[in-house]
Length: 204
Image (cartoon, rainbow, N blue to C red; front, top):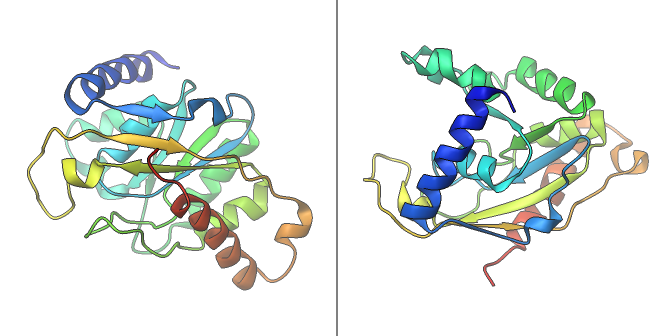
């Protein structure tokens, strides 16, 4: 971890534990070495930092490109391993950046749904994560966050100090046979497989 990431990691962990009673179930299922895709449902702006503190290794994040236009954030976010994404155009450059990161044996957080949920329900996945899987064959660890929508919903809701929990699923490992075929068919199929694994996770 670089110094900025290290500082914000521990600050966020303290805030999460004190104000959100944050916990991670089945943390031992996380893969601590080599290329890994963390695939999580997207409920709130709280999701990326909470996913970050759920993992003991530094991870890379995708975020809306417009966030880098905000004063201070534009300077800070790249130091926190944030990769800007142009959501309007499906930004292939961001996907290529994630592929490079995985091929360098790092860990990346991916939201298969693409954008935050409006009602707290899971949304259909976008094919982007399928493309990344096909190009890297990186194992995918499904995560499901609970409580983040209630704590900070999309649409301008007020911040509430609700309990937030992340449940970690068993890693999904892909083979060359899984990614054979036309990308237009393969990528959505891979993405749905990951989304189904996320949906299968529940609070215990």
